[in-house]
Length: 126
Length: 492
Image 1 (cartoon, rainbow over the protein chains, first blue to last red):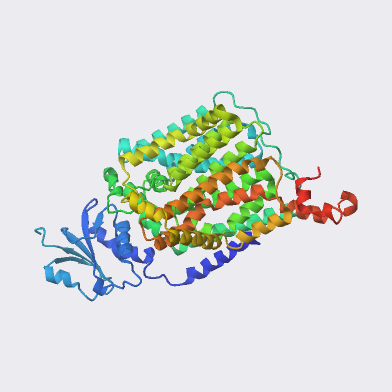
Image 2: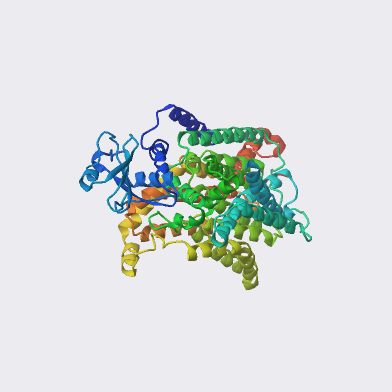
C-alpha cells in the first residue's frame, strides 16, 4: 500500500498540469528575456536592473529574476549593476518606463513590451 | 547526432559493466545479478564520463567531435582491458538468502505491485517535467545553469565559475553529465537534464531492490524498492533536477557494495574497489560526498582493523583507495584549479565557531527539526518499519554482518550534517528549512537498505502463517508461535 502512495502524487501532478502557469515559474519567465539575445553578443557582459517600483516583488524574488536572466541569456554575463554599456531593465508593468533611464539619459535600444527593456547607458559612445 | 549520443552513453556503460562484472565475477550470471551490475554500471559510467568531460575541458578546452571519438575509444579500451586475464570463478560468495526460492503468492503479488508503483513513479516524474521542464530553483540556478555555461561558452567555459554565480565550489558530476550529453548531441535539449534526473531517481529504486534481493531474497527486495518508490519526497526531489538524488544513488551504491563484501564468505576485493569508486563519485557530485568518502574510509579502516588487524586494514583501505583514487584526483584538480571557497567554511573564526558549537538553543533547534523533517520525508514509513520489526522480528542470516559498517557510516553522516548545521555562518532557521529535507534524501535510500537488512521477511512470515498448519509444522499457539523466534530459526 505504501509503495502505491505515489499514485496520488501522479494524480496531483495531472491536476496541476491543467492549471494555468504561475507567472514566476521559469517556463513563464524565460520567454521574457529570450528575444534580448539578438542585441547581446555572446560572451558579452550586460548590466541588469530590477525596476522595483514597477515590479511585483511579492511573487518575483529579485535574485531569482536575475538568475533566470542569466540562465536564459547564457553564455552572456549579466551583472546586477548599471555600470555597463548595455543595461537590461526588468519590470512587470510594460507601460511604465523606468525613472532611472529618464534621469540618466539612457538610450532605449529595445522594448520587448513585456516590461523588459534594453538601454545603452552614457558610458559608451553610440 | 543522436547516434553520437547513444554511442557516448552505451559504450562507457558497457565498458563499465564489464569492469563491474570483473570486480564482482563470483556473483555469477543470474538475470538478477546481471541487472544489478547493469544498474551499478550505469551510475558509475555517468559519473566517470563527467570526470573525463571535465579533464577534457581543463586540458584541451571546449570539446568537439575529436573529444567524443577519443572518449568512446578510451572507454572501449577500458572494457577490453576488463576482459583480459582470469577472473575469479563464479560461486556463491554471499549465501543464498533464505526464502529466495520460495515462490509465495505474496512474493508474486509484490512483484506486480512493484511494477505498478514503478510505472506510476515514472509517469509522476514525467508529469513533473511537463509542469516545470526546467526543474526547481536550484536546478536552473546552479546545476543546469552551469551546464549551459559550460556548453555554450566554448573556450570561455571558465565563465561558469565566475564569482557572481552561487556555489561555484560545487563539483561537476551533474552539470558535467548534462553538458557532455549536449556536446555529443551538438545541441542543447531540455530532455537531457530530465533524462539524467529520471535515470538517477529510478536507478536508486532499482539498486535498492536488486541489492536487498541479493542479500535477503527477492520478496524482501520488492518490499525495499516499494518503500523507496512510495517515498514521494524522494521522487519529487529527483524530478526537480537537483543533485541530491544522484548523490543518494552513489551513497547507496557504495554502501550496498560494502554490504555485499561484508556478507560474503570469501568476498572479492573488487567489491571494495567498486565501493571506493562509488564513494569518490559521491564526492564528485556534491560537497556532502566529500564527507561521505572520508567517513567510509575511516569507518572501513576501523572495522577491518577490529576484524583482521593491521594487515587487514591495509588491504581493505588499499582496495577502497584504488577505486577512489582516479576520481579523487579529478576532485582535487577541480578544487585546486576552479572552485571558489565554500560558503560554510568562508569567514569562520575559532571564536564564533566555538560559540555556535556550544549554543544549546541551536542544538535543540536542529534536533527538533531533524525529527520533523524525518517525518516529512519518510511519513508513515517511519512508523511502519519499527512496527514491522515488532511483528516479524529481525533477520538472522549473514547479511546482518553488513549492518555494523552500514549503520556506523549512516550515523557518522548524520553527525556530520548535525555539525555543519551547528557551525553554519548562515541564519540557522533558513539553512535548516532550505536544506535539511534534501540532506535526509541523501541518506534515505541507504537508511532503507539498513532497515531491510535488519528486518525479518514479512512475506515469509505471512506465507508461513497462511500455508503451514499447526499439525504439519508442529508450531501451535504459545511460545513457538512467536514470529520472531520462527524468523530466526527458519524451516528448511
